[in-house]
Image (cartoon, rainbow, N blue to C red; front, side, top):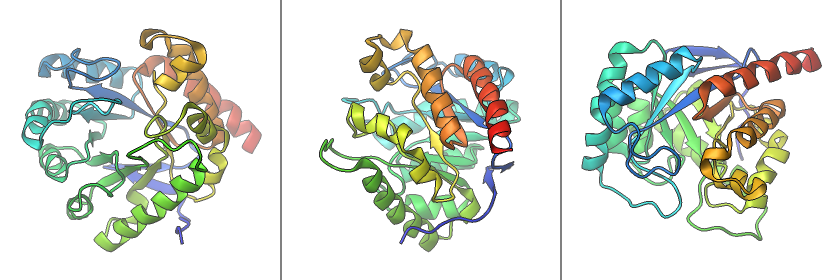
Length: 281
């Protein structure tokens, strides 16, 4: 059975956050040559560091560093290459940023190197269910975990919310066995990962089913292909669709939104928060 959390606070690295206070904004920093949106833009550590500082100045509460693209059809890389991409960047950010740093990876050895360099959050796109060493490393470092739902293949016939809940039940069992602190776990339903357009829309429409789990929720819709398909827009024209999906997610109970366009989404989140505080009064 999927455990229901009862705490109204959660921790992201050194940050303790009161749920319902305001929506946190996670800024995306891809240090990859082939990410679907900004691949190649921030490979240079100096450029990556400058962009991270710009996102923090715009209101980002956490910076999520990724060294391997997870877009459909991406070329997989080994841990050595992934470490070579992320380590110079995380080392710089750990010295210059006052906000938590997250490492976006499914490889335990990459996560461990990042945590030793100053990251305090692991964003695992396979929710502890791909690398058997990941849970132990997160627990040993006292790190926070963002556990994302994922699928190897799309299945249009399944109830995607039921599949997500079953996946999270397995994730939470693994986390508990490893000793990961309950208040350091955030769940991400994986918008855009192994799902049809309709299933991605269902996640937003039925987010209350996941909110009922009592766990902090992260939503990442930024510039994704579902927005492009619904609006018939290329990747560089998906800002308004991103704003709309994030507003819907926040209204539905999301605690964190993961975005490329930080300044615009901070404004959208703050405005939505102000309205939702009145409605939840």
